[in-house]
Amino acid sequence: MIQTLRETKLDKNTIVVFSSDNGGQRSAGANNGPLRDGKQSVYEGGIKVPTAIAWTRKIQPGSRTNIRAMSMDIFPTLLEASGVEAKHVLDGVSILPTLLGKNQPELRKFWFFRRREGGTRYAGKTIEAVIRGDWKLLQNSPFEPMELYNLKTDPQQKMNLAKKHPRIVSKLHRNFYDLIAESGASEKILASRERL
Image (cartoon, rainbow, N blue to C red; front, side, top):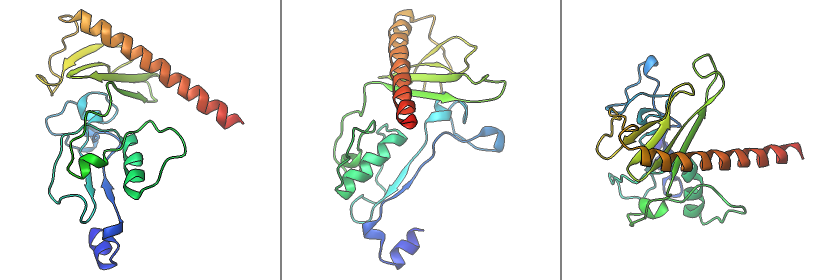
């Protein structure tokens, strides 16, 4: 694709984004490296994915960043890069400064992940995770208790610290349910708009 863009001289006006909506499905042979679990999971192997973005003469070839972003940040990034202003409020945040080699603060205070799956494993219920700083609180099964991990010291999420740090669990638990309520309110607004 990149070669075709070069041959047609469209590469300087085209931004190519290569990413995934979730980690690879391990039962189908995917390898998520050292990250725990994969698709249909809110462990890091299910939500943390690499992303490659190319933009000739704008993004330095071979450059790398560890900035954390979400799929919803791609759209505002492309809007800003093309000089288009959104007509409504967006949930995403542009990472264009990072792509252009500039410093950029962390995009959000809380990182909230929610996934709804079918089948008997989930019974139509959701699984969620919230990250704040180095801490991650998650419920990877609607039928199991919350788990707490420190992603800085335990990026592979092997040591559940929920019993050791009940205050952190309590604090993140409140954030967790505030975000769930906010998400539910957004879904109700969208549903009412669809009925109009």
